[in-house]
Length: 204
Image 1 (cartoon, rainbow, N blue to C red):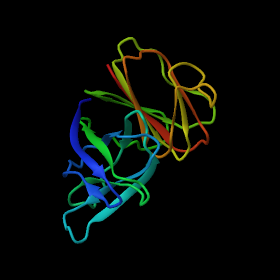
Image 2 (spheres, rainbow, N blue to C red):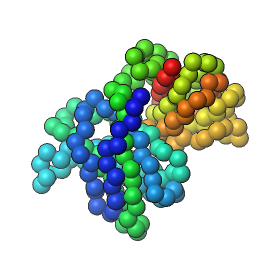
Image 3 (cartoon, rainbow, N blue to C red):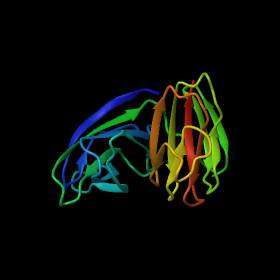
């Protein structure tokens, strides 16, 4: 997967828009000027500047690490951009936005599935409140991306027996994600509630 710079936005209380992107691209990486601030991201159809359509807006806190989201293009959009804004009490902050070279792959049924692709293997595993192994050790692994498609928080561990007290990172709900390069060991996870699924992309 290759990341391409899409835009650097000085986010304010008003929606700020990126250039138009392909409907096939669904993976977005965000880098923030400062962590711990609330921010909204959405998809926008800016075809008519007097009637901009905002869809699938999500609120989360900015992080010190890059945040990865998967955003499926609305089929009714005529053109597609990304939109960013901050709450009214926050001063302007810079957000860097990148898009991936990997087309979006719909997760479909929330059961364990694997889709082979030239750029990697996409694995979808149903969320559980019990520890699950997401990936077995793989000496050929070069990179992995984990997306939490659940309304519950995912506790992700680069090791065995992920739990609220034993995890590498807690991934917030509804499309947040994490990217790691160079780790070839076991990956495990558990959730605060059993709904939705994880989407893992493993690159060799």
